[in-house]
Length: 191
Image 1 (cartoon, rainbow, N blue to C red):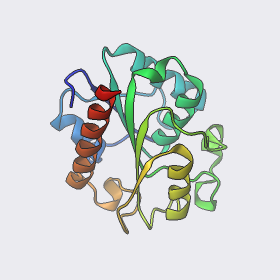
Image 2: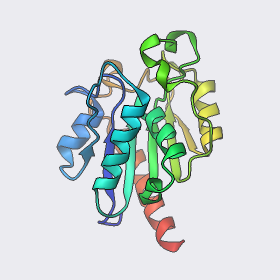
Image 3: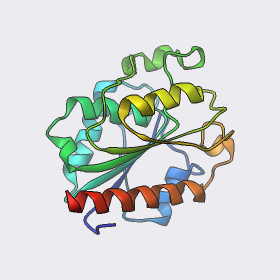
């Protein structure tokens, strides 16, 4: 990894609590920076996209994003609307993006994030999904990966890949991230 790369953690709806792997990764890696939304509960896409844009713009050097759940959709919306800022992003690890068009995902509170953007992401991405995520079928997740141009990892029956599904520090996820980060850093330097 290039030492200039900054890791931005992009939590989903309600933020990531103290036992969520994103929070634990931050605690274990003081150089990881959390993108803090003004309001984690009453979400508005425009606010989340603007906050992410400011966070990316505020760091020097290149950025690698680590998003979970609704944070994945925030990244996808941001990438499609902030053409100048995304050039700093070497890649994004997208974990358990929700399918807001599915029955369990159809929540009025999240309406501003629909429809799910399906444009190819302008940077490398790795999408990690579970076969029994209550918020997205594995088929929907694979479809997002295809549309976004993401490398796809099916981790099996792992729920929503959060604290509630027993993912605490999620060391396997961090291994996926380290491998991905090494890949995007090496390919970016060649290009």
